[in-house]
Image (tube, rainbow, N blue to C red; front, side, top):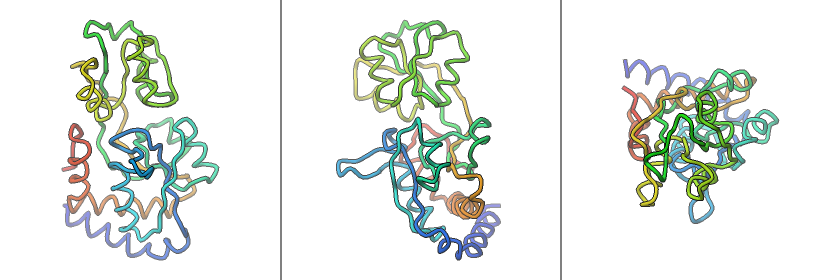
Length: 242
């Protein structure tokens, strides 16, 4: 089966080689504030799981790519308006988002979401729960009996717990686990939540050619094991593709 997937991916990449020329430079938009998926390193450059992934996808798709950062709350509108050509920013595939943009093949499986608290006695069903606005975690909290407190950035949502403004923060476990390990005052609640689908590249619905190329590149990375290797390196709590 893997050989079939790889063969299909290679054919799609070869057949679409001319498309790279028509696209010129493909601009990849990311938040740059959600480690380990994406963050800015000490040199001010985009780094993390999605930087490595995006660079490799562009090589396989024979695309010339450059990275730009954009705040999360406007990342979809600025894609649609043409400020960049693709979103690689830990964005889960949801029906609501697919009404506005298209998504590539998923490059991660669903990642468990976790609660980060300072007090293990926190009542997660009735407490004040912080989450980054516009995320699947914010939508989930809003559907429960808890009080949702939204913030523009993930760091602000964590700070709300530290300063007592919120009882807990809900976010991807891969983002919260290193924070709990580094700060003795914070801890992860054993209860995890599985919400949303896997993560994919966000694209304008009209960019079918670019979607085909990214899909083929993702399929080839799945088939030869390089995608699983990146997931294991950067997202140890996430599942890998069979």
